[in-house]
Image: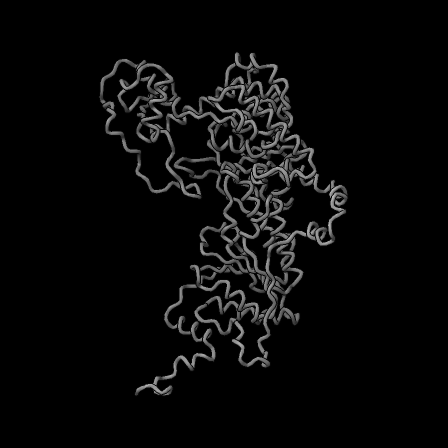
Length: 621
């Protein structure tokens, strides 16, 4: 292992141990006092528990701390949005453990230092994925001739721009996670803001009880990369505000041109090789273990492994031979998948695109496009019906045609459901009737589509009739209704299948224009999340795709879009901004007059029989 890699790994372990000590102070397991030495503020940690509980054996003492004081070494629980839930300020101190008095005179500083070190080691959980990401970054620094001093100098400047291209599957997601999860990068901590359709003007943000520096993360994957015009606007805002910009790619030509031409630091590096795996194993197991198994390491197919493979195969405490066997098996499976033209059918749940890297997605897409002839040949014996089913991608949407409202041929039929006959819809009914007038003017050429209110967010408790409103609007406007839901979109096996379902649904509505597109459970699309959150690239891509479809390059003229939800607060703010679902109407629970109107509508002609008095049907007066 070279000096730079060794230094960065030691630095990572140092900041992680420091984070554990600070967490222990917040939770009351350690105490800290400060002193100023040579102009520097120095923190001195001391245990809040009686160190006599420790026996002096480091392994046994770390196990004891984990058994009895683990609650003091974890963060407070958070909800689905990363916000802390309401919990006591600190964990409850075990009644059978003695505390160390704050004013207790203890001259044995070595004992106190040992207790603090045991606490830090007990709470330290090394991340193999962070370690391999750091090793790849160190190799890119060496290859590009960039020193740590250069990086530090550029980071001090306002609005620094960095471009990092490393040929390793999973690196595009792993590097922002490393920056956010650790304090390794100076002048932080940092919090990423994805370069999508919305951006903040804040240079700093209060996150998890600390001030974090915002940096703009440029996605290089083709799936979730914003358009060139949108990216230019985001860069202008970021650089004007002094925000750092980071573009990470898993291909040497994957960084957007706007960033590549204006970056201050450009790093390029190779992918995962046997030398990098040997360095990673040395960091986890030691140099002697690596030397004993160097022949097994030399036989590994390192080029077929991803960062996720290394993270699940190499784990501290696991025998090195088990890790090597797992790496060999994973490499063989990955190689088979890449050589198999039908890998998407045989890979299974572990190869779902929700955990695939952007480079794997691009490779699979190119494979699918390049093997069309082979796939057609392999299915030549299939029926024509089977071929048509393979070529078309069903969206799962249901198309409902409007019912004629002036059908006098069936006088006994129940009345047609229309907005005019609905009760209790308030502002939603007014919006629909106004839209009816505007649609007539639009069809007559007197009004442009952009002048109409054609996008609506409809919310309300379950059972308040949001779907009924969409069906009634279809009959009132006498145009087709295309019904879908976010859960229908998410039935796609891979991310590109989900995005294709979304785009195809809008395309289907456009082919039937003028039409109504009703999207149920629209809160299921979620909210955009920082890169450090699990599967953030998957959900961010879904949100960005919906934003693009609502107000992107492909206009939705002729399509009335209605999104329905029981939880409007769970929808990303950008979806509710101007030009998208900006009109928000809530349907309340029905009151007594509304319930009477609903019953009257459904009873129809039977209402007279229900309300007739007893005397009229022969009852006693």
